[in-house]
Amino acid sequence: MIDYAIVEAGGKQVWVETGKFYDLNYIAGNPGDLIYLNRVLFTYKNNIFKIGLPCLNSGLVKTKILKHLKGRKLLVFKIKPKKNSRSKKGHRQKLTRILVEEII
Image (cartoon, rainbow, N blue to C red; front, top):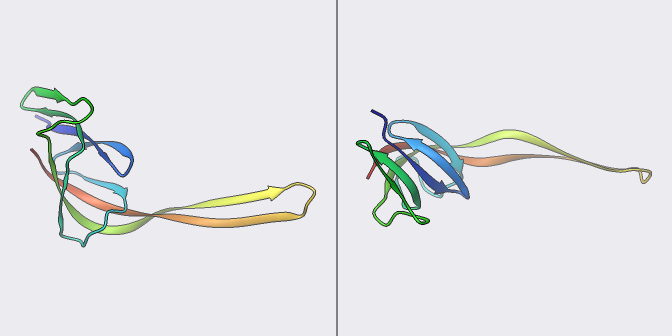
């Protein structure tokens, strides 16, 4: 039986399951800290589902910060024709890897 929830974290809606890890936008904290995600939009547990309008009042997802990392490098290349103007920049997003311990 799979228990899952849809939470809003870092400006994105993420489908999370118990016992799996996910990479989200950077969350301030140290590895090992517990974080409770309270913007729960949907839960499915013990064949019962709950839908929030927009969020559930009683929903919490207990997570643990595993580590901080950087995402893939993105290249941003801008060119203005006939002006001899070029710029090339790289960007790496800061991410946080979290482990979902429990859906409450």
